[in-house]
Length: 461
Image (cartoon, rainbow, N blue to C red; front, top):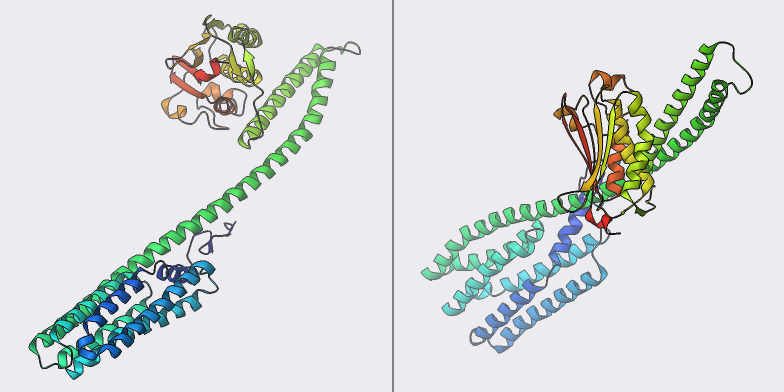
């Protein structure tokens, strides 16, 4: 059966691939993350225009300055508009075009002073500042535009190539040296930009994949919950359908066993009726355990708590198991710390745990063995309800899995005994429902001890 496909933020799958549209959308959002680079380059243009007033005149310097201020104002306005209207998968191409046009216009503005280089009208101090500004702009573009490769390359070519060409054709050795240095610098910036671009794209892809995975997992979790609800409802319906004829079988078997309508004649039939009743009651218990475990796993069981005297709880559990233990030649002892306060719990659930543990002890202990129920304070001030026996014991390998549903030990007598392996799983879940835990310790051939630990808060009423 094919795995169901779930749609996450980045794509579809059972996997979590990222679609190209989703990736491009995030890249465009990155371009609009901050107007800081726009403001910084505009400030540098204003400073350069101020210094160049004596060279090109006030009018030309102010015009160049005005071009950069207008471009910066438009780009900051576009940035603010994009932040308010939000960049989405349907409009990101339009916002990318707006960004590209603004960046290329700014680059053209910065390339314009190179005309003075070709004419030889730019003084050396202005050339030095201009060269430093171009180098800084190229380096800044790595962090500002490298993630959008076409924009990055277009910006570098427009900003760097005209000034470098102007330096190279100059008749001044200093300027020629700057032009020669500019060529490998331009290559280094491109290579550096490629590395940064790949890193940023990989980072964004990973983030989108995580979003997609989280979405897929949420949908898968809901799908699993729906399956679990369907399974529970189906199991509950099946349990009802099974118990209706089962109750009739048990009732008729009990009537035959008691010979309510006269003697049967042959006592063997009475034994058969007794076996029918026993098998029916055992099946009813198994169905009840399976239903309880199903309800617990689906969170449909709640605790009905009250204060329970622990001596009374122990006495009730002993009365329910004593006859079985005696019939198998086992000695059952009960010890309860007399200083213990009442336990705040759901008495039926705690009683069910203890009876499950005692039943297992009776089932897997040889005739002549001993079973002990003790209730006392644990070392951390909580409650320790322990059931120990001198039975077959459990190997370390089996201890790791015997509390899983439908898992039973490998001992021959364990395999031959009745049950589905639900008792310990159900007991552990009921313990956790009371904020406690169930722990088994065992030595093969010497016996097993089950500890039900409950927190101290449950002894405070």
